[in-house]
Image 1 (tube, rainbow, N blue to C red):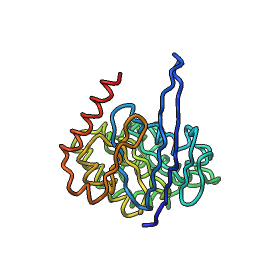
Image 2 (tube, rainbow, N blue to C red):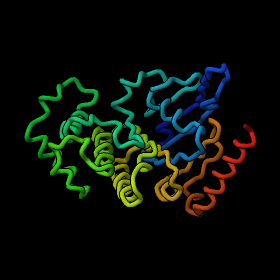
Image 3 (cartoon, rainbow, N blue to C red):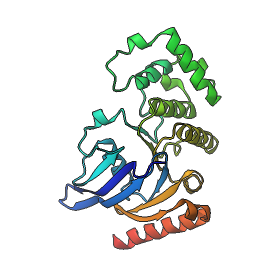
Image 4 (tube, rainbow, N blue to C red):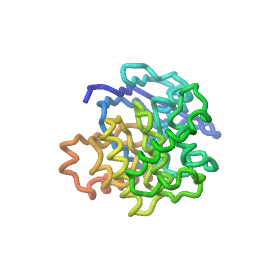
Length: 263
């Protein structure tokens, strides 16, 4: 692992409500992440998790601070230009895909992201055979559904395709935005295992927002706790190995209690 592959240096972002009140989305976030590291992000609603991801994708620009990815300052790079190096998988399996296009068309769109070559030239038998072979490893019969509109897939199948689309170009940064929370427990476990396989085999630097404490402990190299836009705690790999799920649940309950008393 390379030190400081992703660096967030004193990143802050504030929002103004219609009432005129100022809300701190992120406050002085400083974090260094190694290449290939998996960071689990946990926190209560409004902790700043989505704001952090929106800042990393370029959807919003921080008011202060900088973001360096692979020694390049991406702080002000627009979202559309960041799409080829920063990939995001959303909670809703419907997001991140073109529902009326076929599975094969969606996969080829993802493989050509950021490239000038048109989609039509890529929709050939050779590419189709390669995609069928690649997705057959997930044992969901997706290779038999390449011509099916993606909106007809099950949630687990669709989220698997979303993962393949996000990782097919081996992005410099992968963001997993509660990507298993909309699935039933059995499917969520299967998708999480596939996710870990993809991430580790491709050595992808990954941030994963999750409410499943067991996943945070099992798959996270570190766990970052966000609270009211700040980093409240960071658990190292060594600390994670001795953590129990109940400890994290207790921490989350305390944070909820703090927010309730403050409101």
